[in-house]
Length: 82
Image (cartoon, rainbow, N blue to C red):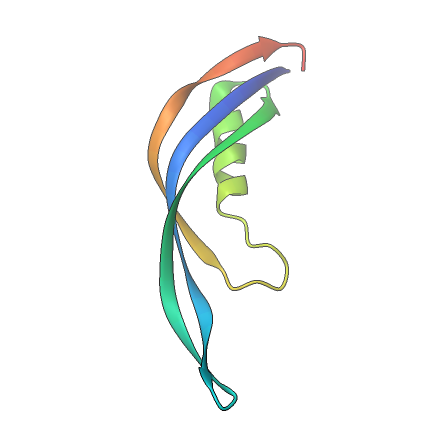
């Protein structure tokens, strides 16, 4: 098994609550850019990339789902014997 370092520029968007006053809440779309990195263990680069993408699109418990769009990739670096 090998370790692969993935780095990607992403744009995320999510509906976020905004307080309007008097107990009223409205949801508005918020968008932000981020850079994320992760070391993934896998048998080959394709398997590791799939795990990385699954991690990018996860929804933390109790949160409103967000949408992630990959904007750019750096080619993965690899190390043997993860």
